[in-house]
Length: 69
Image (cartoon, rainbow, N blue to C red; front, side, top):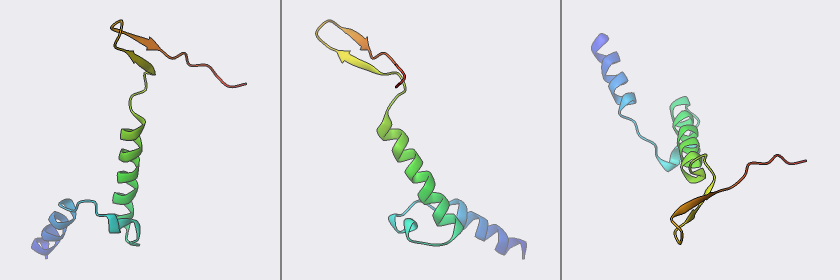
């Protein structure tokens, strides 16, 4: 029984994201789809520091963070 459980665990540990995971209803697929979406969103957002690269003068121009009223 332990060997079967270990094989199942290894199969789950080696599982990677597939585009079909968004349509599947099992917990593993749902978790992989959500994690993939979070990583993708973070990657597309970029870094937190808002600057404009100024290649002419070699300095970065900071974008001020102001709240909306």
